[in-house]
Image (cartoon, rainbow, N blue to C red; front, side):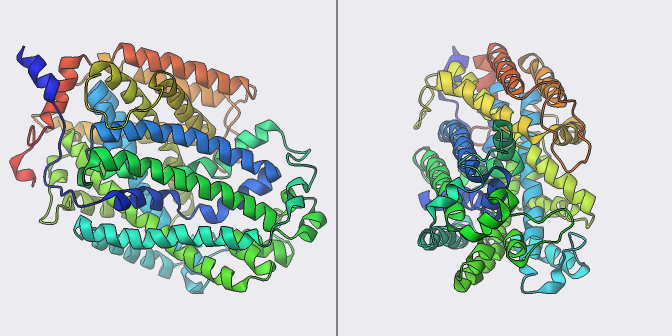
Amino acid sequence: MATESVAAVAQPADVGLKREMGLIGATWASETSIIGSGWLFGAYFAATAVGSAALICWIVAGIAVVILALVHAELGGMYPVSGGTARFPHFAFGSVAGISFGFFSWLQAVTVAPIECFAVMQYGSHYWHGLYNSTKGNVTGLGFVMTIVLMAVFTAINFLAMRLFSKVNAGITWWKVAIPVLAIIVLLFKFHSGNFSSGGGFIPKAVTWKDIFTAIPSAGIVFAYLGFEQADQLAGEIKDPQRNLPRAILLAIGIGTVIYILLQVVFIGAMKPSLLAAHGGFLGIVCPATGHCNSAISTISSGPFAGLASIIGLGWLATILYIDAFISPFGTGLMYQTSTSRVGYGLARNRYYPQIFQRTDANGVPWVSLIFAFLFGLVFLLPFPSWHSLVGLVTSASVLMYAGAPLALGALRETVPEADRPYRMPAAGVLGPVAFIVANLIIYWSGFEVLWKLGIAIVIGYVLIGISMRFDSKRPPIEWKSAQWLPVYLLGMGIISWQGQFSGGAVKAPVNTGHLHFGIDMLVVAVFSLVIFFWAQATKLPRDEMQLLVEKQAAHGGVDPAAH
């Protein structure tokens, strides 16, 4: 009877953090991650891959990501705790599943800030040429030093109290949203509707449906949308989170989807018709492998929207866009440095990471986790092009963390149906499994070159977390039974990818076999996803064990008093 009483009221809470972020701050936390440096190149890569059919890519990817956002909105409102993506699977399935999805939440966050630092250096070299060597595709010695300085700046700003940090981020994000909106409005006045049929129709003759689906990951479309979950990562610091957090996620993804689709529309419509006619449509607006191309195409390929503005006589807009190309990745890197520290804090709350990661200062900042985010970030700044490639692959592969949320949603709907859910995902019985299929399609589209390296990363994660938990006497029990589906899921996705159509990476000879033909491969992913989804629901933690995990994180439950 006592167990049932505890189960009815158990609610996780965070210790040491301060709820100082309002609705706008939470919305902009997600928005600054969605509207990153990707918007500057996404429309170009998509158009040169599949022509005007790029619009189909953005719409399909937008729908997919909106479904995932609905899942995170319900979970975040239900359990508004920091590092949410690392903690929802922990509550639903216990430590084995929680470690897997939690580690990739952290890995995704810790790698993005350094990558955005390199983006700042690359774009900044337009004005400060000594920062980046375009021939080698890498930063110079000066650029490497400046990337370290920039990481230090990210870290220093994050030591501000959340109410002040939120204002800084909001100011940057207002700019980041305003500039693409300005570009959309201005370029609409240079619109040529005939461009949408240039090169052989809306879907060019040389383009197949496989090409369209391939462009969704390869052109960076689906990854441009990701980042909406940042409000979940900061949930422990959002005011009235049950009300504001779901709204922030849905507002952010709504704004981002509209902006990205309209950017693709104006990029196609504003291109000079004579340039398209001379090169057979958008598929010809690329520099060949030799690197020799005319000045107009070279200008566009080096900075698509700024280059487009230049060749159509809008030099003033090009200048603004070059400035934004510096500010945009700066804002994204700053926010991911924030989320890395909060995910590390959340993993300590799960007792996967050392309890010192929970330490907070007088401003409510998890300062130890923040310092470690900086130190681990420096590892990803090592100036080796092959290392950068690996970082990019691991970052892309980290979409695995999105698969944990639909599983947790389905489990928690059944385990605690009476729990307070300020936002309830509509038709969760249908959209929950669909969201899991969507997440796995995103993983599959990443390609086998990405996924085998993902396997190496997860082994490293298990080792590091295993060492940490070994020395924690209050570590959670190892719940194998409720995660019996996990090894089958991870290995199964690897095998499907190996036999599938998407290679991923920048390799000349694909490492996947291609035995699963296009169309059949995605059907196999969908069926496999449904099997895993319902298997996971059948083996989820029993209610009393699930509520016990939550109770350990309620108020000061299970926290080392010295941790804050």
